[in-house]
Length: 134
Image 1 (cartoon, rainbow, N blue to C red):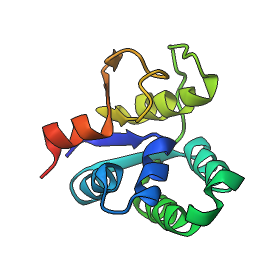
Image 2: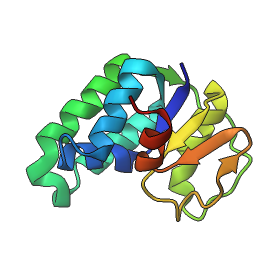
Image 3: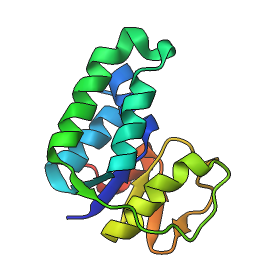
């Protein structure tokens, strides 16, 4: 059982396409791994869900975020020693370091260009499923 942090774009992708890759990632993580969040990550999920461009998809995305909030392990973000192009994404690495997570799953490798940050492996949703999906 691995500890996994999910970038907000995975949550959004799951809500936009039920049954799609991101949806299957979340299902796999919830069934077979430990999902890691922080107060900052949960806040980011909520802010993003409420953006006008997601209005017509808000309900399924909120359901996913609500489920994660209930079952995920919440940690206090540690200091992130790495600087990212988008500082808003550093909350995901901070939570991963705090929990000693194994994997951070993101659909945006431009924001996480390295394959590893310390011991945290960065994977795209389809890569995670091909390696760990059942």
